[in-house]
Length: 341
Image (cartoon, helix red, strand yellow):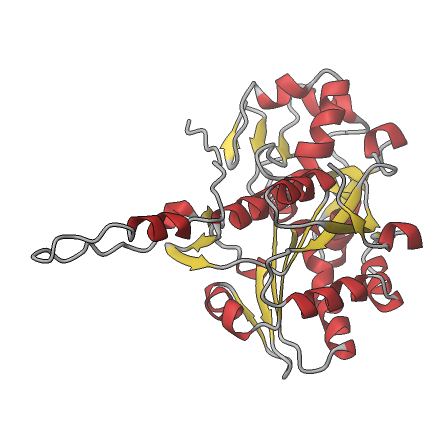
């Protein structure tokens, strides 16, 4: 079994090239040509994630996948890299933003927030073997810790909490395995599909804490921290849980898995034969789950980034998210404030 890990990379990769120009080569020899950064230097988007990569044009077109990545940095007036579990709400959210801001093309990536953080640190993405350098204007995660990392790097200084969510367990319709709580996840014969602890915020900041409190984290993980990997005969760690877990339950390769409550609602809405097991407050963490958003300080589209942050506080934006089951943030939480140390 291969265990994959994601290593962080500095955003200032270009400094290496600048330093290399300090000494001239002898006249009889041509100076060595620096090759572009290898694809491995960038954060890798898992295959088949076209629906998480979008470019919204003002004429109504939505370009997806590699073509969206190809044009995003040039064509978009504002670029959003957001925690992926809100992907199903984003068409409505972006269209509401465009109605308030006519003529603004919007680039959007919705992937696990830890993976997005790696891409910001690395300076871009690799998808389907090609590299796409560039940074977002706005970043959002399911935990303030990721934004604190950007603050330490001098890349972000203010944030707001713009909505809330809660954990639940997704199971097949009718709950054939009789799963009613956390301890049922490690019963013999129950196969789980769990968000990975490497870059999926739902597990990094919330799910793991719940599993550890119930004393079953090691039974699930077998001491492994990986993604797209089988940790035990009964557990699979996903790369993008909100798309994989419903598919694995549908295909009969998993019986249950942690998801956000909104993700179960969306899966049911589009016809998936699944349902959610509601958890008690101490396991759902409803009072703790907060989505934090901020603009990068070095954004070349700073004015439009500020306009987007103003938009997330609007009734139109909050209503667009509430339509899909997200819990609106309070007026105080929506106010921009300094990121704490």
